[in-house]
Image (cartoon, rainbow, N blue to C red; front, side):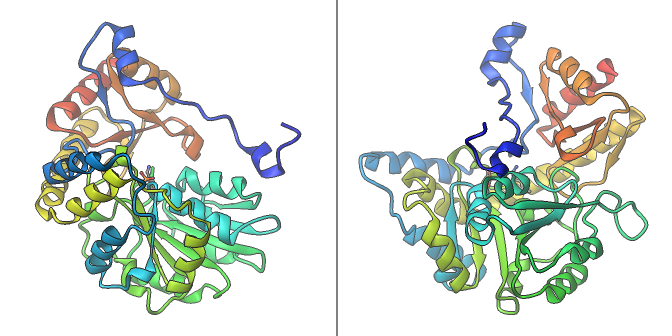
Length: 366
Ligand code: PMP
């Protein structure tokens, strides 16, 4: 430990969960329900699966290190030049690239108290300093959401990166176009502003912004997206960043050349061509969220209103105990203590049957 740099010394050891099959073996059941990682219960588009299978025929060759086809498809989707795109092994990878390029000793990263855990991780791995800003107390915006005013105030000379998740995980809170645009306009240009849109496709609020539309206005803006959520390709690990070409050039300098494998690239191209699958996934999420909210209300529980494919619930007692009891019922959810939310569990929206299982188990356990 003493040999590691200071950032690494502050990181906690990674706590892996048990694989589903191992848990089922222990419990003597075959139908455990996993609603712990915000995956798409429909899985990928059949077209994406077919493309990945076909690509396996070329498994002996290195993938296209420039991701030519995938970047072209993403560029067409966003109406930007392919030079604006950086591909990642999941969007975690591009978040990490940002930290490696724009952080480092002596620099600071600003993000919200309940922000996505990878901002913390990447900042420390880059031996930079995390500046965690308290979330809204509800007086000037959604409770537990990003407090943009306080985040702006935390930005200084040493700030290299500001991370904003819209919507945020695990709170499911979101920022309106005008407030986010105002925040970006006020940021000093020496600060890279990351707008993490991992759950973009799920949000149906009329005021919700597509930050990639502002790329021409803000040369310091980096927008991240993923194929892991609405596209259902979490196992294949594909995400990307959209930015000014000069920023993309820097990110691509530190990117490992073959960070996105060949079946993943092929599947992602096919997924972009299947808008119906995304629409089906979003519709299912809308219905499932309603079902979960109704069930939680019936149980007398409070939750943080969420526009994502997950909801974080106040279980009113140590979340680890409830988590363990749910595990014994064959229902896997996620305690979110490490996000600064003790007593809270995050439940991913699943199929109708999965949601029912989760609600029934929660009712018994509580
Ligand atoms: N950002 C947010 C806010 C997330 O919740 C996640 C997934 N948990 C990611 C980024 C990263 O997802 P992936 O690496 O699978 O693209």
